[in-house]
Image 1 (cartoon, protein in one colour):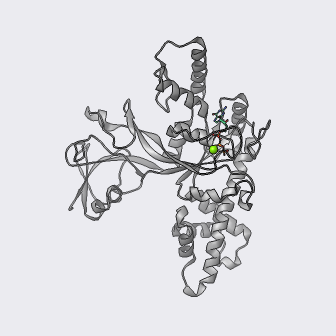
Image 2: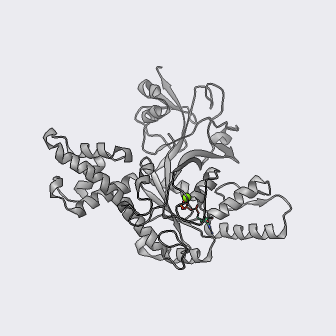
Image 3: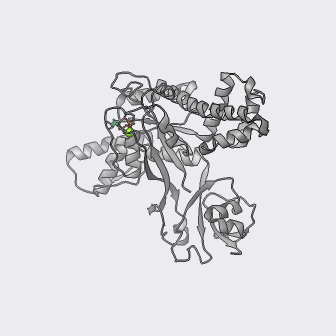
Length: 396
Ligand SMILES: Nc1nc2c(ncn2[C@@H]2O[C@H](COP(=O)(O)OP(=O)(O)OP(=O)(O)O)[C@@H](O)[C@H]2O)c(=O)[nH]1
Ligand SMILES: [Mg+2]
């Protein structure tokens, strides 16, 4: 199962533009707020080093693609409607669409760093992006509070069942990925006691916020960095202690789009995520100037930021690593395709957990795995490693 990344933020910050450029779609994007109402779901990619070259081979991916020895592995991207302050009380489009993000494993908060839009996405001057960073966390917390309260009410109503609180809450919030262990840990860290009828609003908010941060870790995409105002805001905010704990990645969706288009037209050679590109065709002076501007942007910010945001989310926030399952013959599957699959799995899983991810039959009938680099056997409990190529040997 590919990890799912949700794009959130106030209207007109470039969520749909980010979605389009990362998934090569063309959903509507526009200057006015609430351009998006229904969610868009698409396939984006994260980069992984392809191991085929180590063996003097070329890979044949079932999903995604490979370019210059870099494997682009699919992840799911979801673009939803804009969110404004007070959404949890029904403002704007309210927060009903947040349920479209229930299953998101990680969020990307797209922020317009230029300050050219107010908090509701209407044109403005000198709007402070700090406000956007702050309000969004509050709205997400309130979304969790609403659902948590439903769970607490249920717990009160069913007291006679003697079902532990963490079980009731895990049930109520399962769509969001809340687990019993998280509820227990939050309650102990918040030092709030185990009797919800004694909790005040602050306790409930603490628990909601804790669960939100655990189940929806977040990366901030500081978008529109091609504009001077955005660069200025970024430099200032980066220096502030208050925002030190956040992953803020400078992004220009427009720069990424220009490069991808030029690459498609064979005018340049650009690999998504790279810090540079090569001009292949004779271009007009104007075109060259435009591209040179983008080149200096790439130098300053180490790329356009689009790939970096996706990869921060998948590799740093979710701690996923690539593992390549193959059959018994060399590096191929039964059909003879070289390194056909790449799974993104949590770095702490075992060889047997991995077998279950590939196929439940392989997990149930697991004997051992074989590390295809060394030929050594790996037992059920041995941890998988970043970039492993594994054959699963089972009785089935
Ligand atoms: N300068 C600049 N403008 C951008 C960039 N990315 C998006 N925009 C512009 O921002 C505006 C809003 O873009 P959308 O992608 O529709 O924004 P959204 O966040 O999906 O908005 P809603 O669907 O209304 O919530 C459009 O005019 C885009 O062209 C960027 O990297 N740089
Ligand atoms: Mg949109």
